[in-house]
Length: 408
Image 1 (cartoon, rainbow, N blue to C red):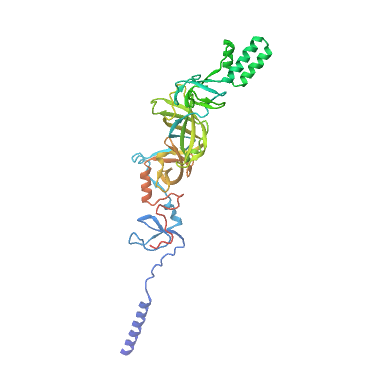
Image 2 (image 1 turned 90 degrees about the vertical axis):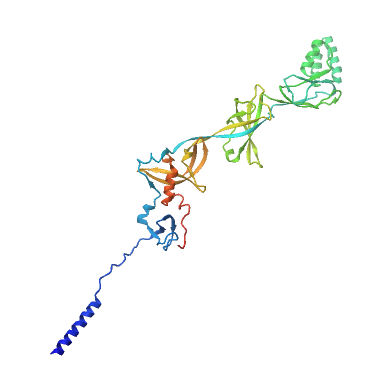
C-alpha cells in the first residue's frame, strides 16, 4: 500500500514539473513597421542626415529614422508667438513689383569734341608774310587772325577784273568774278577788292570757329602749297566726357540716358548731359564699356583733361520683383530670405538676387509678389532655423547636407 502511494506521488510530481517547465508568460513581440524611412538623423544634430541606420558619430546613441508621416516635423519653419515678434525686433516687408532704376557712380575724363573740328588750309600757293602771336593751346574766338599769306597769282587775276570793270561789260565782269572765286579767293576778299578798287593779293588766314588752337604749322617767310594744312581748331561749345562702365552694367546702357557730372575744379556745380554714343569696342585691360557723354559748355569752364564724378541713371523699363536689400541673408554660397507665413511661422527660402539700387534688390526667382519677408531680425530666425536643422526647400539640403552612403 505504501509503495502504491509513493508511486502515485512520484508520478504526480513528475507531471507537475513537466507542466511548470512548459508554461511561461507571453512576451510582447516588437511591432513590425512597414513604413519606409526617409532618412536617419541624430536628434542632437538634426541638420545632419544619413541614408542608413546605425550609431551616431556625434553622440553615443542610435540614429532615429524619419518617416513620411512625420515629415511635417522636418518642414523648414520656425514658429514665434506673434506677441514676441516686436520684442525681438522682427519687422516685415512686402515683396513688391516695380520698375527698377539703378544709379551708377563712375569717374570720367573730359576730352575734345572730335565732331567740332575746323582744319585751316591754304587756298592757293603763296608766301607767309606774317604770323600772329598764336600758339597751340590758345583759346580763340571765331575770326581771330593767324597769318598773312601773299598769293602772287591772285594779283594778275584781280588786275584783269578791275580792267573789265572799267569797260562796263557786265557779262565779262560776271565771268571774271567767277574766275576769281574758282581760283580760291574768298568772297570777302573779292568784295573788299571791289569796294577799294585796288588789288588785294594778301590773304589773312583766320579761325573759322571759336575754340582751342590745336596745331599751327606756319612760320614767317615759309612757302605754302595749295591745300596745305596750316592750323587745326577744336570747338569748345560742347565737350565729350569719356566714361568707362563695367561690362556687367554695360548691357543696360542706351543712347540718350541722362548723366549728371560733378567736377573737382567746379565744386557745387552739376552739369547735366546725355549719353551720345556707346563705343563698339570694349577695353580689354579693364573689361569696361567705353561710353561717350556730351556736355554743354557755353561758358567755356569745362576744359579737356578735367576729371569728374559721373552719376549714370539706368532704368530697366520693365516691372521686376524687389525686396529691401536688408532682408537678404548672404551665406557666401547662396542667398536666403526668411519668408513670413500665417500664425507666426517663418521659413528660409533660397532666392536668386539681381541688381541692387537705392536699398532694394531685384529678385529673379524664389518669391512671389505680395509675400512678406523679414527685413529686420532675420538673422535671429535664421540662427534658430539652423539649430533646428531647418533648410530651404529649394536648396534640397542644409549647408552640411545629407551624406549619401555615409557610415556612422
